[in-house]
Length: 115
Length: 109
Image (tube, rainbow over all chains, first blue to last red; front, side):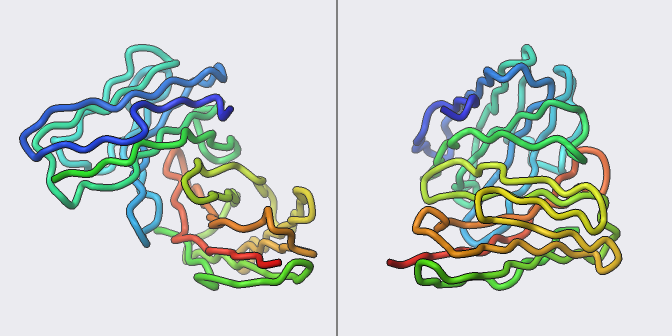
């Protein structure tokens, strides 16, 4: 058990659909992250929340909308996505507010396919 | 700026050794190493915080050369369980942990 749970594991959606990805961490961490993992590309940081406040937004298109209602839960709301948004979306959490010396704990990811 | 990893892939027989390198064009203050098996989440291996620091995880060890702005991961006497993709992560500052493209390691019996 990783301590970070993501649902659903797989999601297929059309370009006009609206869906949400969910992440829950049971580790008592105070920072949560969304990463995008595409084939043959480095992990891309999308959003960071620390103490439920967004502290980082890496120029992500507005069709991705994050929400962090509390320190244990993180959502990624999706609408009008493009086929190039198909990827593995990974949620992670960490103890400290800085990634300098705090390891990331990842969930198993949601495999998203946009048709 | 994302770190550069080399090689992109390596194939080993059980018991063989391998080295994975991670280099940055910017000053490094720490380096993270993670391993991801197919269909699974990346798993944290170790963090190196000081130049010259070396750490170990099972028979996997790493070194950090702050001056050269690089880190190396050493797989010693590889086992089948070492197969996966290894990522280095470099946090130049704040939250921006940038990952390398990964090195795929395949260990064969």
